[in-house]
Image (tube, rainbow, N blue to C red; front, side):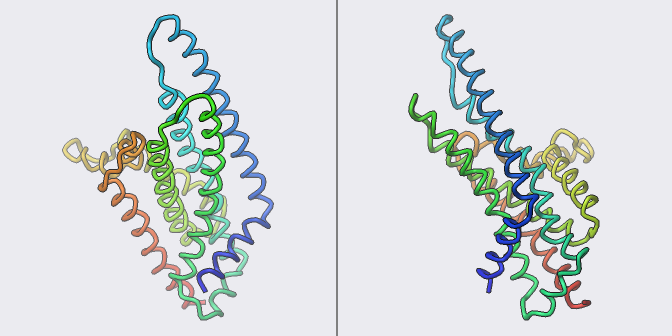
Length: 250
């Protein structure tokens, strides 16, 4: 049943015209960003060659590409999480799910995994861009793999949080706006720091970007994996409970 839900949700996403527009826009932005980073790296390499100083392709191209893609995911994924649930409530197609013997957890997991497929699609595109550098110089694929893992985990957090918001807010534009602002606040929590001075460590530990440091340097740090996993699971659990309550009231 879960596989059926995933296939149906992916089919709905592919059929929706917004998916093609957003994917084309994201692909174009990533391609332009990759080109700009490569041009800047070549210019820096020429200066470094004259001054006999080292320049790192990883630091100049690969890490910035992964870092900027986090912002792109924070802007784009709220659109898909809203399409996944908020519009179903607004268009009352949620009645079709309520009339079937499908649990709220199964439905939510199906939607979550189908949205995660978009993250994998964008990451595949980024990896194809990065792989072209292999023709010129050896790449640190260990660091690249851990960075991809970081983006997948951050994507899971964005999707689970977006599904939580879209379960409670039925207005599509409002849900997209709240989700985007929530993603932005979550990323910049360490800088915004709403806690008192003595609670600064909370802002650092709860910040989404703070836990990418080790992964972006090729280090698999178990506390970082636990943070992303527990954050995603937390939002999925409370979303499933809320969705179950709403389905039983239909």
